[in-house]
Image (cartoon, rainbow, N blue to C red; front, side):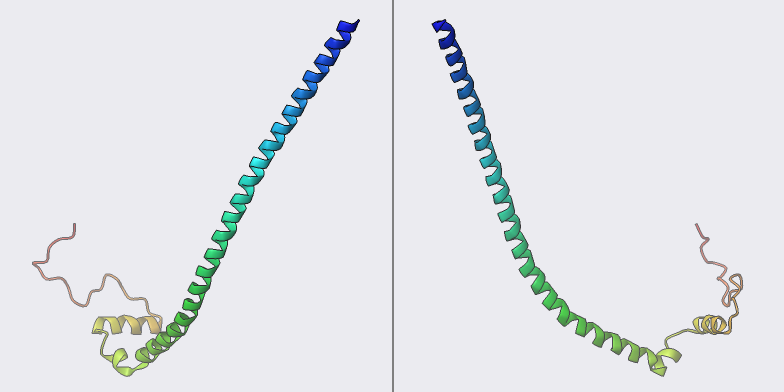
Length: 124
């Protein structure tokens, strides 16, 4: 009977030691995981802070460029409104096409004002 009690106590001690080892191993793995998660969060927060500074600099630069864009845009509108650009820059064919479009007439694509010369190369 005494050997049975000793064998039971031995089995109990081994199971308690195994359970304690398993439990402490779980705690160790959990602490390693927690350390890795905290390091990843810290790295992400540092990257976010660095990118936030960069975004602030870019935003400040873009705010100055926006004013330049408006000034350039206004200058282009003024240049187009000058009569020299309406009357001189376009050729006779372009003016004819624009006038036809303004009048609502569809130009005939087969009608050419200047036919091709006889020695023109053929289309591929």
